[in-house]
Image 1 (cartoon, rainbow over the protein chains, first blue to last red):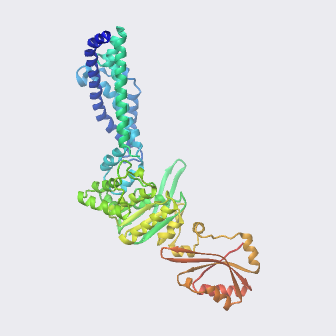
Image 2 (cartoon, chains in turn cyan, blue):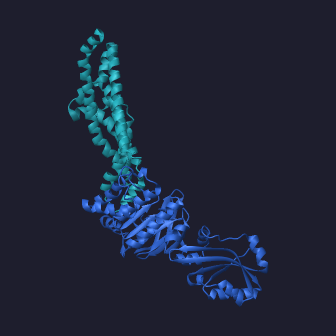
Image 3 (tube, rainbow over the protein chains, first blue to last red):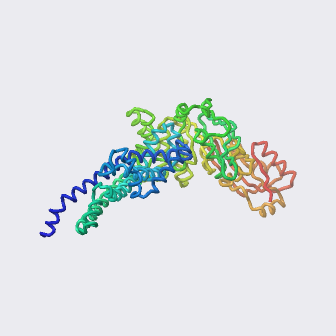
Length: 223
Length: 337
C-alpha cells in the first residue's frame, strides 16, 4: 500500500501533466484536421465522375496529393516538414511544434475516411432530391452529410485513435504527452511502473473514445 | 403535358457507344396514365429519366406543359422539376429520418413555411394511409409502406406529373395491387398525370390508358390499352400479353383439331361482350363452335373477353361465320399448329 502510495505521489503530477498534453495535442490537431479533412473528403466525392460536381482534374490532383501524404510514415513526416512547421507556427518543438505535422498527417486520412463514408450514401437518394428540384448545396448538407453521419462519426473515431498513436511519436520533438513520458522514463530510464501506467492510460483512453464513437454512430443509424 | 420528341440517348462504353434510347417520340395527355413496358435493358429507365433530365438526351426535345426544357438554365430547370414528382423501385428514402421528416425535409428545403410543411405532410401521409406512422423509421416499414412514404413525398410538392420508375417491381403481387390502386386514386382524385415504366403486364392492365412497348431502345408498338390487348401486332407485345392470357395451345393439339375445322381466337371488347354471338353463329351457319378456353380481362377502361374456339364445319361455312363475327366487332385470329 505504501509502495503504491509513494508511486502515486511521485508520478501522478507528471503523468497528469503528460495526459493533459496528450489531450491538448489530440484535440487541437483533430480540430484543424477535421476542418481541413472533411471538406477535402466532400470535394473528393463530389468531383468524382458522375457525381454532383464532376471534375476530373480536381479529383485526380486531390487524389494524388492525398496519396502522397498518406504514404509517408508519421515519424518521417515529422522531420520532413520541419521548415514548413517553423514557417507556420514559428517553432518546431513543444505542443505547438507538433500540431502542424499532426494536422498534415491526419487531415488526408480524415479525407479518405470521409470519402468512404459519403460513398456509402446511395446515389438513388441524391437523385430523388435532384428530381425534386432541390439545390445542390442543400442536397450536400441535408442528404449526403446527414445520411453519412453514422459512418462519419465512426471515421472520426478511427482518426482520433490513430492521432493518439501519432502523438506518442511526437515526443521525439519534445512535445511531451503520454508517449513521450513512456519513452523517456519507461524506456530510457527503465522506470517500468511509469511505462505500465502510461500504457494502461492509453488503453483506457482509446477504449473510451471508441465506445463513445460506436454508441453515437449506432444511435444515429436507424436501420 | 409531356411530349418527348425524337429522343435518343447514347452512352460511351469500352465496346463503342451503347444506344440506350433511339428516336423515341411520345405524348402523354393531361390526366391520363401512360405506361412504357419492356424487358430489362430495353432502355425504358433511361427514357423516363430523360423526362426530368436526370439523364440528358443526346438528341431530341422534351416538352413539359409546352415548354422545351433541355435548354433551360439550372435554376429554371429546378422550377420545372418541382412540378414533376418521381418514385423509384428502390424507394430512395432517407434512412436516418422518420416518415414525417422524409416528407417534410424536401418541403423545408423548397422554402415552404413551417405551417404549410406540417399541413402538407399530414395531408399526404393520410392520403397514402400512413397517418399512424409519422415517427417510424424506414427500416421499420414494409416495402409497400416505404413506397407509400415515397409517394407521399412526391405528392407533397403538389406536382402535375408523377413519374414512376418501376415503382412496384420490388413488391409482392398483393402489395403491388395496393400501390396500383393508390396510383389510380391519385390520378383520379388529384388529377395528376402519370408516366410509368414497368416490365409487368398487370401494371399496364390495371391502371394504364395508353401503352408503349419498348425494345432495344425503340418503341415497337403503341396504342390504347384496349387496342393492344385486343389486337397486338408486334411479337414482343404478344409475349407480354401471354403473361396474362394464355395465348398458346400446343401445336399438336391445334393441328389435330384443324383436320375438321378451324381453331380461332375470338376477342370481344365493349358491346360485343354483351351479345350471344356464338349461339347466333351456330344457328345462322352450319358451324358448331366448341369452346376450348376462355377468360375475361378487366382493363382500366373496359373489359376484354377472349375465347379460343374450335369451329367445326365446312371451310366455306367457317369463313362465312368468321366474317359475320368480325362484322359484329369481334377480333379473330386463326391459330395454326
